[in-house]
Image (cartoon, rainbow, N blue to C red; front, side, top):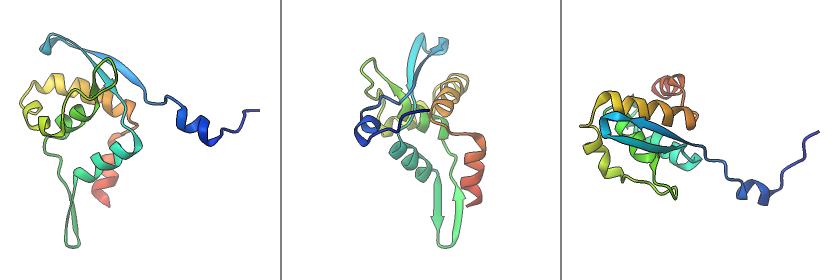
Length: 120
């Protein structure tokens, strides 16, 4: 039987996965970290636009936004700011898609999650 976790054990757990991704278009490797719960909520909120009773998805530059949130340095600090997403969006679509796919997987973001957001 598994032991029950305490508050302290949960809060001290190092539970954010990372993975290195080869990006030949950029000339090297980047480290991608999964989103925290708060980061994921903010990311999802950033792609939903509410206008009165109408809700619609704003998928503009979604790959670059997630890449900016999840690429970290060796100490786990973000490499890009939110404002860098615009410039990142001008980089290779293949490179962004490769990093985006890993960030999506590490963060538990499934394609059906985006569809669910669009439906709500």
